[in-house]
Image (tube, rainbow, N blue to C red; front, side, top):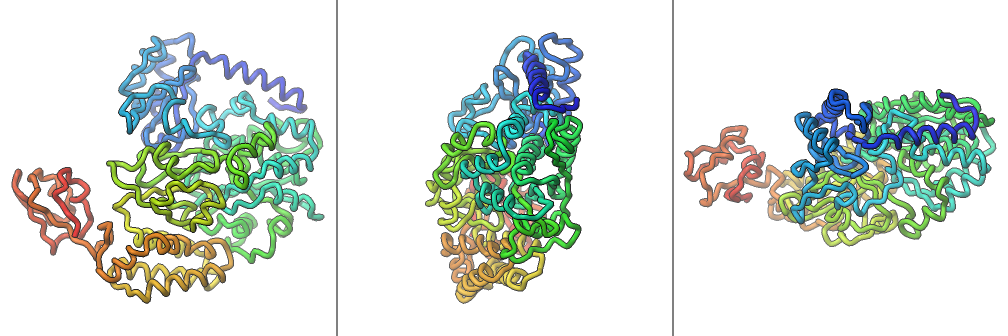
Length: 617
């Protein structure tokens, strides 16, 4: 259906809302990547078959709604029944007939499929009362998990493109930019620069064409925020980009998506096609003189192409290398023309600001970090997944109240924020408020929003080595401080992990890190030493123990540890079964023996032992 006027859009919206609300019972089946990996596509298909077979009058055949990621990735596949809000976890194909019969038909709750709280051990039926969701406030993720990402009608029904309609009807381009500026929204891609200021500067440049670019090249290990939004609510990203284009006077936009996100590309392209067919993208948008279109560019997976200038080089068909920062992209960006580049989360937030107003948005969060922030929780945490929380919430609330704490009751040791260029914060920083300025002052950074949680069996020297290894591989090699400096840092850190380091090496790494930060050309090199510097700041004693005592306190670095079976061994034979090199021998119910010459220190025996009869020395 092509919409050639704003009144026609509002008429269509009412029709979409009637259709969306006519579903007396809604069965939301999560088809996010984590749930798909566990078979949610098969679960969705089974629901369609079962509903059709039973001919249930109060449930449409198509009302088994395939949605994007609900965020609670640890418990997928997820199925939510509305309007009750019944939340089922780890649903299998074999459970579908029972859910349809008991829950859909007879309004009964199946206890064993409900979420079980880690602390209280209680089964919680209602979606909104689960601790993982209670402290969240969803703005960027407002529609994620509640609409079919492949249907523009669903997006329209829940208020989509209302902000665009408002801007084209009641606002001038300058007023749109002013509203974004008043909201104090800072870019969610990592730098935290004022979004309104960026747009205003670009709009004032007397040069054309102007470009709008959405950075979907999310390359941080453990980060999947932007992937989820692009795959679960693509129209929110498009609407944000269209509003930006209206504000700065652009006619062409690009979404740069990394190669590893094929599902997001499919969803985005479908959304773009739908928007074009509906008259919301292309020429004379909604019957006005405003014209703007969007193309998708796929990146090759280079981490450095997440940097703005390297990304623009890649879109232009050149080698993805950064340039000096004194050349500002809002003045000379893509093709040396004025360009606004923001990330996925930033654009997805814009429609809400225009629709509800800057004052409403600015009341959320802190004075200098307004609004909410999306984080991906990964690593040693019970509730892995995606969360959106108000700025200013503490790390403790995220890790324990929302994240459910550390598995197996182990102790929290550190959290790494801001991706490979961020920093590791220790347990004494758990009450730190999460906002741009507080994280920077603590030696880390907000970054795009990845959070990797570590327990007491994590070696911080090895963590620093791992992130340096990642950055060495991802450096474009254009500037010497980054190319050679990060390589040398990694080499020295690996040497310490092997028990060959010296105290002079630790001092040298600190000096080199400061030089690399000051002399590197782009953000990769400038922030590359952060993981090392933060671990040295808070966990220097571990480095010293590796150097002086030739020991790894966490029992991780293979060259510095050995596993020993104690007299507490019950002879259960579990360790014998998992040992990959047959280094353990023994009879059932008798103490086993571990051959140190054969042992590779893989730790499989330590992990499998339920009786704490294997020690690390």
